[in-house]
Length: 399
Image (cartoon, rainbow, N blue to C red; front, side, top):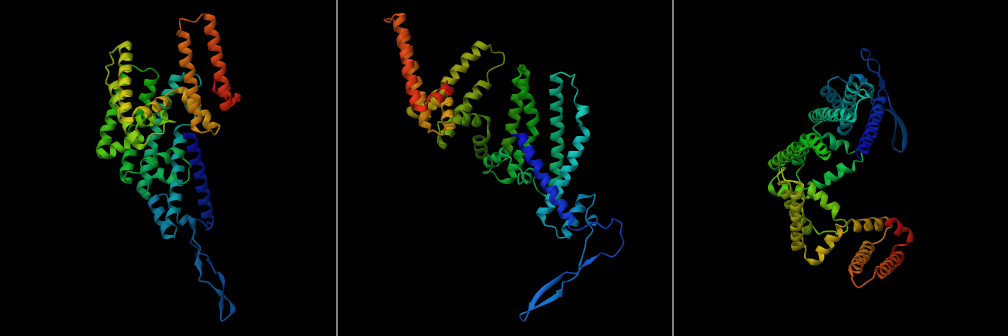
């Protein structure tokens, strides 16, 4: 996704630069130090007077030298563009393209591929250099955003989204729409502040980092949330977490096919957050066996509270949505443009088969031969039912 966004931004900048060159081309240069009088253009225009066409000469318009408008100082450059009558949106396009090109050149000069890449170095060294480059790039991008903000009074990322199809940025913009624009900027700045450190620690923790790494990550998350609560009111913070917290994002993925109402989703996020906080509070010194036991206990408590909020019927649908088997059937149904009820039916048929097979397997009155015959017949009947429902080819894909 990030590569696609960068490609979109690159294409957009190319378009802007072409537009700038075309606009410059309207006023051909005559030499930066030329002292000759400016050329004039006399336009001949036709006007109708008393029903007759009369050829008139329009006022003489001095031709400007583009190099008299350009300046190495951006503030002077902007003043000259405004004095020339250039529209504000075009000024923004010109300056953003120019500044972006300048910073891209700075980055390339500092990180030439032939100097940075050493094929004999091990992956851990490459990963370390990548992290360092990310931090450097983040600092450079921040400097560039600040410069654009000072010069034009606009947010660079918002301006770039006018030209690039960045779906992730669009998703974020919709999720944060309930916040005033000033607070959106403050939250974005806060996230940028913590992003690199959190990403680095998270990657280290996923690679099996020690307890110290996990402790640092937990402290960093706590610090981020504390600073976030200084920006947002308690009500805004609750709404923000419903839209953007890792807990809410995970639930949105897990609940495909469940289709919760707004009230159900709010309740489930609260219950899930309590469960995750209990798990996070477990001491690092706890052995794996006890940790697994407490994890199961907390999960049972989480599911029991979910049942209280949802009621029995919706709770059954909630449990079904958590099944990987149901999610497989749901994805296949969506791919085949079949209704959700098809996935539900496939899931119910398979659950019924498992339950009956378990009864047969545990029936002490059956001989091994009788048991094998019954189980084989049950599987054949189930397969025939599913064939009629979704077709043999799709059943093979599902299996």
